[in-house]
Length: 376
Image 1 (tube, one colour):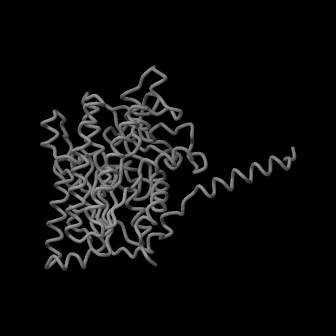
Image 2: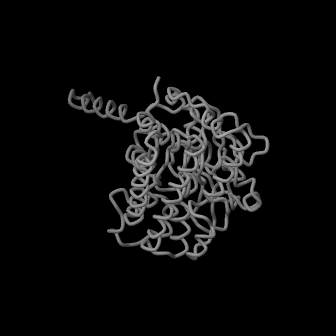
């Protein structure tokens, strides 16, 4: 049947609108305008490129140390908790830099920066959390520990403080995302949302102190990312599933958990505003991971994702969300993997697929570029 002129116009409008919604791909080197020589990354499993699997516990217990993790791009497990590349890998590409090697990689090339992130790490120290009856069994390498590694590394490559300032004037510092495991630990160990919220001021303070530390070493461009809307993730949708329809928003995500994340992110943004006053000559900006994920979620169909599996894990088994806390991807070799990870947003119910990270990183780079005040 021939299409009417109105139908054709509507189709063109939809296609053109979706085109303008799409950011530039990160491998287009859009960050090269900033002329970054190095990138220094702190964080957790969203950014870890292989630190946890080089720690005593992680080397034997981390699911990310074996296939199917890494299958899509690397064809082997690298310690990245995804089927392939992470957001920081795409950000490095956008800056025209190679992937950052993990700090604990003895054969790593740190010419263009270092990845200090550790899967399972927390913004607060494990000792602080233990006093709040929250245990973190995976790693002790909290943000404070990662900063100690950074100091040790910088002290080995800088002769003087002035030398450090000169070395890092063209560097990008990514302080996070981190803090998700503080929240995970609290909620999954039975803390109420109110109790979990009480951790947020200390978490924000830890991140502010981290920014102060990198600035003292000479950082002039710092991104401090927020957290994702965790109420849309299979791990939480499974753990806190309820028959109460009012608990879910229009996207079938858990409202209370997303409100918790919004609260956490707003407190962080307030902290960043305070840091900007404290360091008026340093570019310190918020990385809106929440909005990047929200954009991805809302435009999943245009981006090529299968919207019928939007809330399901690719690697997993059981339940409405293809996720089982006692039978997780990588930990059990019999856990199935979907045929096309590029069509799913969630990789293992906790982390995202390479395809999701690619689109989010592209959105984030477009959002950050004007805020970084780079000159051509």
